[in-house]
Length: 241
Image (cartoon, rainbow, N blue to C red; front, side):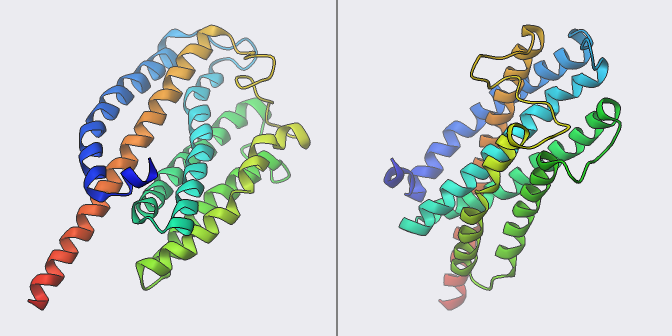
């Protein structure tokens, strides 16, 4: 499978066919989730209307971590097999992951103020580890930009991405190991979700929509990168010729 999609021509044909469908499925799912969040579901019994922000915060939190895992996998594939499309995917995932992490941090602070009485708590491991994740994304992009060749950028970025993976399980299990203002998991639990179905169903639909949107944005960025490199190569050949 890796060998099939390592071919740029196959990838461009595949992504051209799939990309519009991803957008077409993602946007209605996200819109439905937000409509449910702000106009349909009842206020949460304890947190009231402030809990509605979970329909944005939770998918952003999940995708901030999932995108970094994708960044790690693509970096690892490039580091071992030197597949250029794997590096293209990693490069494309980084700004998307940074955006979702920024949304997670912002909505978490907005949610935390009425719930916990504070915008931020520096001794909260979950908050700080998510901030570290955001800096990892920024560091990855800055490190790549500082290199003078694509190969150097890919290598330096891949090493940082692989080392930084250790932060993801810290984020996931921080509320179970250390004292935290953040509530424990209410969806992904050994004994099943504790969230009411009126919240859970639109939340999961929205999360799936954001996942499809992330995939669509990644394919768009990858296609742009491939076409840019082809255009640059063509300009160089014409200049030499």
